[in-house]
Length: 237
Image 1: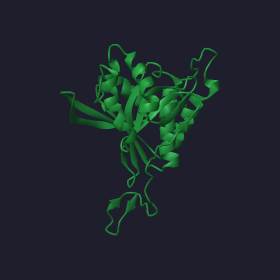
Image 2: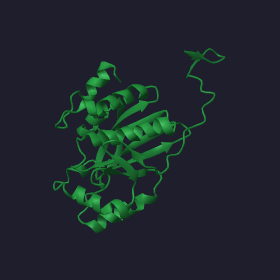
Image 3: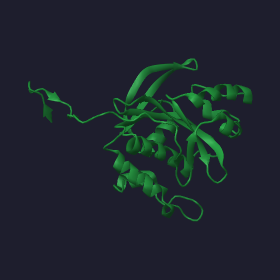
Image 4: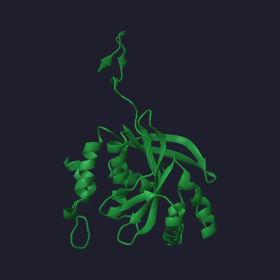
């Protein structure tokens, strides 16, 4: 506990804090996937084809955009994203095929406070529930904490989006609360659930991610041997 000259409790002093770096378009490479700066020319056709496999439009329910009835409307939405810097968008690439199979972004970027969010996740069926999906988020977290120097990485979602909530918790994000009636989107109310990982959490989470992503954790059929939640609970994290 720290106190000021009036003996009032105060937060931990940070006299050397200089802020974090602004994220730039970079390539982040792992074993299962690669993230590249989003380019409609390079990735647009792949993404439209991958997203169109969702015939029920299930992946768009909790998004602010979409679904798109045709390639022209999809590209109308996609094209400006190439030059956006907040959010800063990435295409998620399957390195075995070279095809783009998803999108993610850094957003709500506040380098002077060391706070950043990851979101705008659009994972096609080729990416959902795969090691590549976990690794894509791991690579973004690792870059934010270890290269850019952020103190806090946030994850927010519609409180009714239970798959997103389960994903956040599985990845080691900590539940922080519910913002009631936070947003109106798509003609309906959204209560927003907040999660975060902070810098002192990251070494633990990072080790669990690395252990789960290790080739030793998958059998000859590509099935996991130990769940990520178990690795976090075991303290390998």
